[in-house]
Length: 238
Image (cartoon, rainbow, N blue to C red; front, side, top):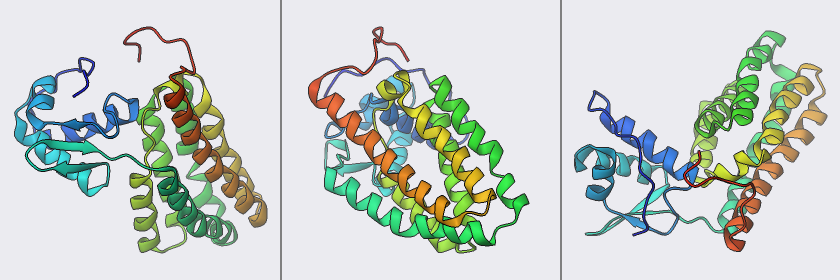
C-alpha cells in the first residue's frame, strides 16, 4: 500500500459514515487515494481517527457509486477507469444532455433559468479558489438542476449515476494550474445562450463543454503518465 499524506482527524459525531464517505471522496479527487491500489478499512480508520466500521460502511457506499470495489479479505481497490470507459460515459451523457439542453431552452421560463445563475457563479468561484469539492458539488447541482427542468426524474437519476462513475480523480494539479477555470466559466456562457432562446447554440455549447471535460481527464492522465507536474507545487501543498 502506498503511503498517504496525513489527514485531518474526523470528530466522532452523528452521520459519521457520511463524514467518512465525504472525506474519502475528497481524497480520491485530490489524488491521495490512487486508482488500482487496495486500501484496508483498519488502516484508513487509523488515519482518520475513527473505528473501522464507519470506514467499511463508507467504502460500501463508494462501491455502490462505482468508485471503489471490494477485494475479499484485503479491503477496497480504487476503481481504475480506462479511456474506453470514459469515452462511453461521455457518449451516453452527450446523447442525453445535449438534446435536453435544447428542449429546456425552448420550454423553461426566464425565472427558472435565472435561478441557476448563483450556482453557475459558485462553480467559477470554487474553480478560481482551487476548491475541488466545492467545484464538483456546484457543478453537479447546476447540471442536475438544469436537467430537472425537463421534467423527467429518471433522466436526472441516470445522468447523476453517470457523473459518479466518471468522476475525475486527482484534480489537484489541474486546479493549481488554473485548468478548471475555463471549464467553470462555460456554465455561465451556457446559461446566457439558453436565456437568449438560441437552442441550437446552447446544444452546440453543451457538446463543447462535455468534450472539454473529457479533455481535462486526458490531460490529467498524460500528466500522470509522464510524471510531469502541471504547476510548481510545494510538498504537501493543497
